[in-house]
Length: 320
Image (cartoon, rainbow, N blue to C red; front, side):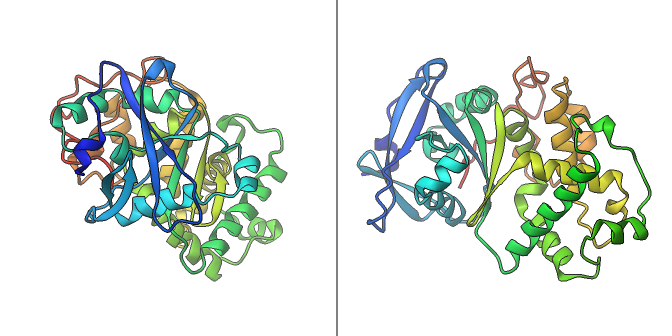
């Protein structure tokens, strides 16, 4: 059965949602799709991940047919399928339905792809939350996340009641303060591992801005076996920037992207497409035309559907 036969035609303002079968005893991953009006959809999570240029050659059984995905998405789906009961409970991830572009959109139907792109803003803003997939573990990634935790604790101790970015003053980096904070020496391998973490392709793509900003609840980062709240990483980035750390070569400048996205999410103000591209052009990769497309509900950000880069983009295959 071809992937096209898995899908029924979608009506206006209609989406598909995926439910995994969660059969841990089986090696193969399988699930089912339902079709719903977006305003009547059951609670679901929307997945944000890096497409990549890899081949889509790993089968997932959906509705009795086969959909082929790439290794990165397959790893993400497998991780979501294998979440333990405790992980789901502790991270408020007990929602059973998922929206994943590569699976929930018929990739063989260009017209459907275009119509679903028009709904991207609504899809992410009406999900319970965005799940961010950074990929599988690498050696030392636990050290990187432990360092993120250390920095967050320093920030939280220094500014325990902070709710707004304006509460954080800009300061020059101080080696004396760094020692007082008890953070690892900048020559430590921990900072090198943080560099590796922030070099994940997800952090350098423009399209992820909307997927984080529009999440009604705090997004969750899933990196291998680690599940981590977005807000903590966001405050770490903001504190590092305002404490002068991002001027140091040993601190990853990709934290600028995290800081910028977190600022937009906290502010809830209107941003034009041009303003977003200016604020990210030096800090993000936009080599693929699809990276230029960002669609936001009017109540959060300006509608961007009339921008000249809109037509004909994100139609050569969504997701991987």
